[in-house]
Length: 149
Figure 1 (cartoon, rainbow, N blue to C red):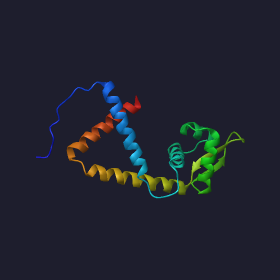
Figure 2: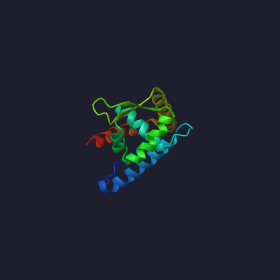
Figure 3: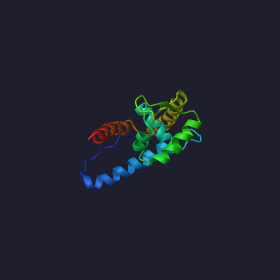
Figure 4: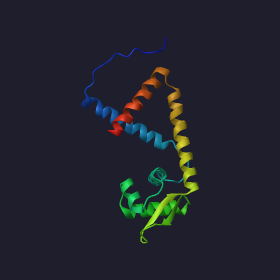
């Protein structure tokens, strides 16, 4: 039988925290690298993802979400706009503002990136035992719980 017997060990939170944070950081970095070949930078992809999640944001709101300075966001948006991935529309109540949103092309690019990342991770998970995959399923639930706290 290939299943492992897991012996419960008490791990102090202070010891587990850096191990878990490091594992999450490394996995996130590796998943981010699993993307289709293209000239979108990680920063541009992140901004496009934020717009996809929010639906529409002002440039200032997008800069705040991405935690970059407005001039940096202006350059990022200009590149995305050049590629037809983002569109500007007038703000409904403030004529000095614009609203940014993803175009159909931008949404298609996001779907392509998500598909590539999910395929990479699914291939890695397929190499694990059923017991290990169940452990990760439960860990994912717990991580979601921590993230919502």
